[in-house]
Image (tube, rainbow, N blue to C red; front, side):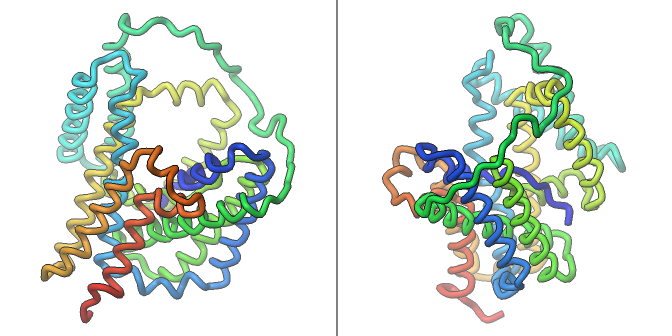
Length: 355
């Protein structure tokens, strides 16, 4: 399926909670968690939760993703490293988004699909030109042109039961996130054989985490903004991921190229995320309307309450989060995961209605 794969933010919670321990405890826990996830997926156990993802649940997941990414978008647009005022950054983001929406409406074919890429390039160039002369020259060292991504790596495995238990809760949240991402894309595209897709998709995510544990890096997950990217670009072909993956692998051998990509202004990245998430919210609302998924007050509560709770948790201060029991932080501290849990409880148990 056309899902973007990348580092799992939820695993960072486990890493932050365990940063006082030895690194091999963390990498071993990531490896074991990925192995268990793969075994559960390939055994077919995830097929039993397939029935939980109704039209309302999938639509809420689409909307949840946008709302729970709001803190990230906010930090990017109002980055403290910016040489401009917050008002300028807000105006820049709004104008760039309006420009991309206009281009998406007017352009056709491959140009319509390239709106996001063109927005990143255009926004970066304009922002850099405006910033010239305002920010002091950087004295950071230039990385080498060529390098080996596996240089200096060593495999060290060691088990700590407490760290492992913390990461198992992280993987519970990761599995819900992964499952929600796959289901949301499946619902958006009306894909067939979803049980088989879920089994393979979550299983591959587990294998990816096993490899990540061996290499001592953050494990991957299917990114939940994939439906927004599909909607915004009009491209739902999974084959487009093949050249993208090959290109990323190729870039990993060139630190200078990676450094150049990382120089994209945060406000531009935040603006593009606003554009993508707006498209994603529109997709969720359109799905609810087309399938007549809200016909009464209770159905409205099934949609509204999880979004409100998830948004509140997305903005919860870190000092308050540290007061929660450590084993619950990966679940309660993740607005997206809590939103998914609440919408399923409302839909299938508390406010259940006849289908």
